[in-house]
Image (cartoon, rainbow, N blue to C red; front, side, top):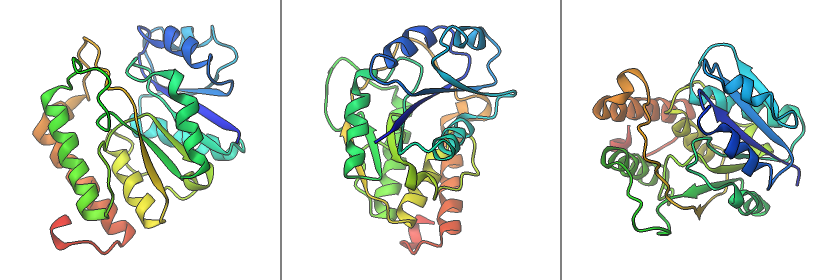
Length: 238
């Protein structure tokens, strides 16, 4: 299979160079989607001429970056896509393993909670609480058996990407993907990846930094996605 590895980047000057260098050890076809960075990210990307780059002139959101990756993968005739974050929380050496799962599945999703690699790594309490709650919705409402709703380390068959219609360009975008994956009866598998949280503060931006607001926003996006897909689910899921 011809696999593209893609990285969403936004003001990642602190992490970009080592992450890209490591990614290039494990794959030749690499795309960076620069979502309107205002720091040195564009300059640093130019130092990697072998990396394909899509630039959004203005910051559009995490989901917009993923949507650009999905479209590019299909348009350029790749067989599959691996997505990996640029903040140092994913290990590029696992790219071949994630990609290999596409031989049997439509979506291969990393899970930070299937296996404990380092007991000293503990996720921020509010992020873990929200992940657990959203994962519960997906399992109870969609009949899935997931352990991690929001891991950005994933692989997709290109034939699956053609089916997705992304309208939420923020951090709730994965909920649309999960709903549409079930709608189109895609095969999903999880694989364990290490839980890595760096000693730095990462913000969602604006009102989403408030955990209660963020969870309510996710709930609204999920319900809208269910309605659009016309899925028959338990009444409490809406």
